[in-house]
Length: 478
Image (cartoon, rainbow, N blue to C red; front, side, top):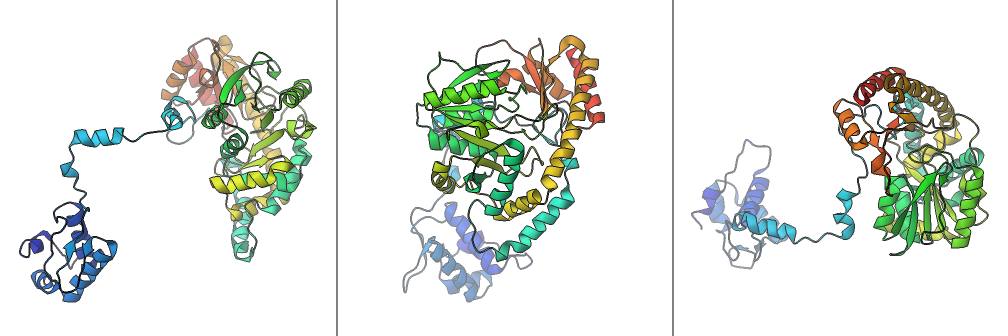
């Protein structure tokens, strides 16, 4: 080995790495690759230095580094020895045994079912019409937001207390929600989470035991379906009627109910006050909690919105869930959760345990953005803009597709549902090939039914984009 080892090493004085780094990396690679076997002795530092034409200090530093990492064993008066059990030679493992090793990695039932959930929808490349769920980031007041971010970043060193939920944001958001959504709460009941989906997961994990029953709307939000299943719930799909979730006495009594009463996802229906009160009475009698997802409840076009379900509740059974991503744009993904006052400590502890924490600096920027009036001003401007885009899309689809699509004009929100008679999955795939993005209704149905349709977003697209995409859609459905 004294003669062979120098021939395995190739040091370059022209490279960017030092001689010590090159020697250390190459010796490490020979050990892990199995070319230097466990128990094998290296040449003395003097002999190796002479053979490589480097200083003895260079060799000594490399040997000491590898010894510190555990690759070599050193003892007084003896040459360095390769430590035991370090070979990672992949050539000694046959492809068959390598595959078998991968197959022995056991996945949880949750992980094995991920690919069957059909959620979240993934769209490659840049967003295209009519991809739902997107705000128009081109219309966002980026300059005002940038100023808020810069001030928050400058103030960061001055903040001594850093609670996970930033009190200025809690207070600013509460004032907005109380005035515009009828939410009744104290500021410290608001939790700021990385996304609305993480807030949904937090509630499911905190309130459900494995085997508990939970209800979701059908058609409904796929994120709720996967979060409740992941928490071990037995999920029942509750079909809709004209007023939203049709409360059923034939189903097992739920411990948790997920609803989108302001704009039902995906039909856009508004749950009237009578059904809301009926749902609250049912939850009280069943001992169930309700997750109210107000995902795009900021945008109403026909009349003043009905107050949030949370504001109507006489008992603390409603957990109100919202997001900034729809009212601002997709990069501001923060969600928020209004929890019952008695559960504040538990939910904040659950936040810490699950790591559902957000940047205090961005929370501070959002607090200023809301309290300055920029947030509400943006919402009001976008409400007018989105109403015009909704109307433009309704007209364009009527012109291009005629009676092949049946559309319920949503009273608010950012997307609409166009029902059809064709196979919606095949139709959605054909549209995607032609450059138009949609989501098939059948992928959002969790009970047996023959309903077909396309879920189409209008908020993120200007009139020219809407007209062009409608022509493509019309050509394909015809």
